[in-house]
Image 1 (cartoon, rainbow, N blue to C red):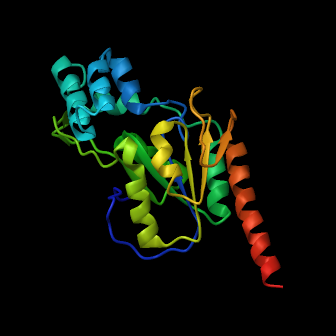
Image 2 (cartoon, rainbow, N blue to C red):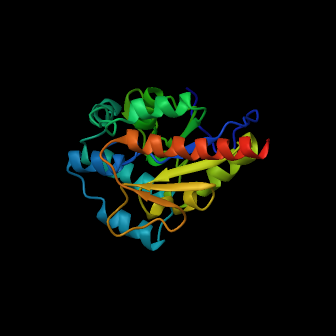
Image 3 (spheres, rainbow, N blue to C red):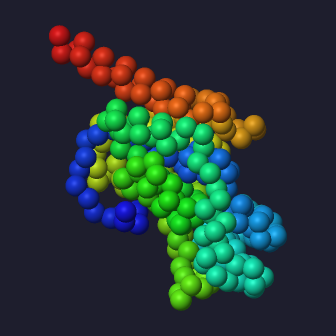
Length: 236
């Protein structure tokens, strides 16, 4: 599976597409970055607060996190980080639910502010056709101080707009779980906040809570079935 690039070229594909946030939607862990920091005993609170305040860019935030890993001596090896990421489990029902969505005619695209190494694994399991996530570089098995910020969590809509322009899908759905997904929700025909943060409500579409991803898949398929029924009625 090729790494997703926001402005990569591609043939049009009219099939409807679902843009998935990864952390907390396709996986049970709410943040792959926080998961690594937490398990390494690293506190990145100051960097995170500076990013939220707009004092630093997301690319700077990513590089500062990597610097903490390297300086701590706890994550100089890429194997250390990969082993941690491999412990992260998919959300219950995610593999089965995504296969049902593909069978129903959807393309699946991951747009995540999380770590690309995890997104690649998750994408292969669920059958995602494209993946956009933030890249960590390693050389000779060692983490490098600069990564690549493919996805700014606050600007996911830029990637979605580019994808829609290239592929021209019949319709689009976005699924996220936090305010960071607002720009996704604003740029798709339908949006679903799945098990959203307690203090957040998606004002652009649906809010849904479930302990099984299959419930989400069934709801999305019902949207397509309703649209298909309307088209059939118009053709009579």
